[in-house]
Image 1 (cartoon, one colour):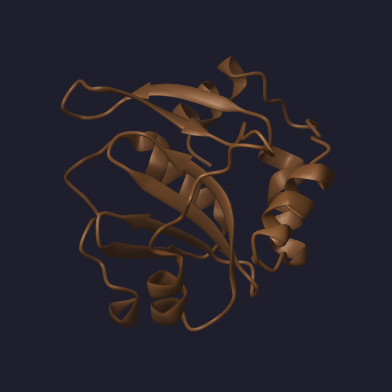
Image 2 (tube, helix red, strand yellow):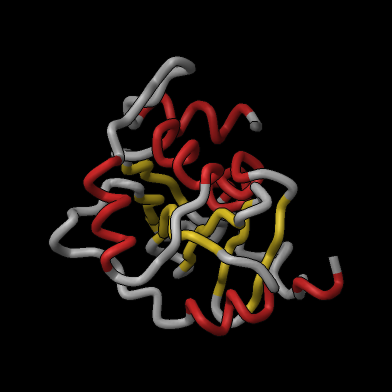
Length: 148
């Protein structure tokens, strides 16, 4: 993970041995029809309960959030479309306010970020967080899953 991402995570209360009890959140997501996988569970234990504030490359304030209320979960309107393009089960693991982004972890342990009709895939969720927290509006948007 890059130094900017680590700095933003630390400012939000994260540290290397940080652990979050995500059991009730995972149950709430499963009750909405999502299927958790071991990699997503590890992600939530490592990064759950955080709200990282950062600035996009055009100066607009944003936040990356894993601090969801079990009674007010995001809707993930494009979930079926994303999962269809990814080709394996995905589990919601975070969102960012600007540009609107949703982070998922696949059953094979990859990080997937959905950004306004584009899907970006990363070898692991840490690299997906790097992308979200970079605030870079110029890329790598447009990298379709089939092209990676």
